[in-house]
Length: 587
Image (cartoon, rainbow, N blue to C red):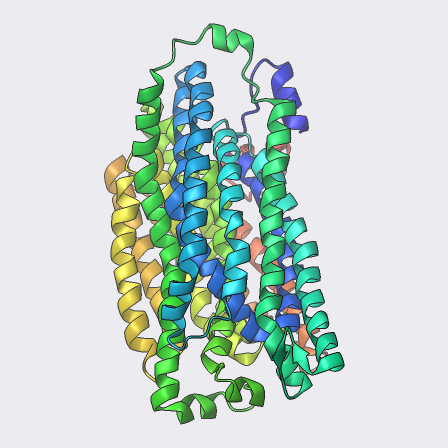
């Protein structure tokens, strides 16, 4: 808020550098992820991995439908707003915002109808057993598509103006409502079901034979109660942004509008917006179809194993599956819930770099619009350098310390095994996000969708083949994810270099962070193993993670992986750079 007010006094909108904007979003991501942990960890205890399976099924249907309907438009809006700002076409910027509202409203309503009415046939196919227990969660989540569509208008608009505060604040608002209402909803539904069982021997009208079965019968409705918090959070996120826009505006002054050329015809603006958005939306759809592929094939293939070779799964996971899970034929749902928990941890890393992708798009777009090769190279290398510095140690840490981390967070051993693969996959998934943003920024919005289409085929084939092998089972989905994102990252980098005609400094960008990350992860592994002999395992894990951060920071400074230009883009960058220069830690 303060930043926007200062921008107005200076006669224009707040404009943040790449790292400044990314830092704002990173703070928001950190807050949202802490809130998310406070939501997901107790939620897993309340509704168990079976309930998390229903929860994940609803989310995995929601994401691709939302992406197909609207995900391309925030990026399209941000790109066109940034491009027009660089050219001084402020009337066009206002027109972009005006025409986006009816487009998003219509697409949001269509997406809501598709999810609501398509829920039953989808769940029937995905579970292959007539198990409709995920339906309540899907029905309650479907209105969130409409609210999220309206939220996307304002986020894309302000991101194009290089003002990341509205996006950051609205994300925190959404997360808080999800936390409070979601946990309360899940808990109250479970308690109400148990109270009904104690009074009449039924749970929501269904007779059950024990307290364990009573809780199992309440899980579909408890998952829906948790989802209710998500839907209400998205509604309040929209309300917050609408009020923010009404109170603060966009910082474009009357003088700026008066000196701006006449806007393009509204029809031309709509056409440009749609043409830019469609390939981006298809690319986002392909990304989210990855989770839909997991939902569709993992449970179905696990059910195939249970029908032919159930002894393999029951023996491999002996002691981790309760009698209720086995007797009610919910082993596939349980294992998918474990995979969903591992995916939640896996997504922590891409969530961080998504902030860099959002912040990078207007900056790289401006550099590309000016046509300065040196500026383009510096912009792209800055993004990749900072992203690699985060993704490589984070992904290696998740993989190497998967067991202790999942134990620390209260997840079971199955989740830890899956995270070994997904931790490595997180490195590539997190790097791929800003690469796609930069390809879109330089006008090649078609390339991410082409790459993602191939990657999706790879994932579908590997999921279907590997998950169906009894000895591999749910781990096959982790292998498919790792191979898919490895392909996307490598070929994305190749195409980015080809389109921009730049040669990257591979050693500075990737080798130094990899070596530093390897040293920090090895240190953490040794500390965790030795400390676990002396103190509680959870305390040992926290200590190991702290040591990893310190060792990694020291390695990065020793190898001088950071550049002065990176530091200068931070708030108070001049002072920070001077301190680091005095110690010879930057160049």
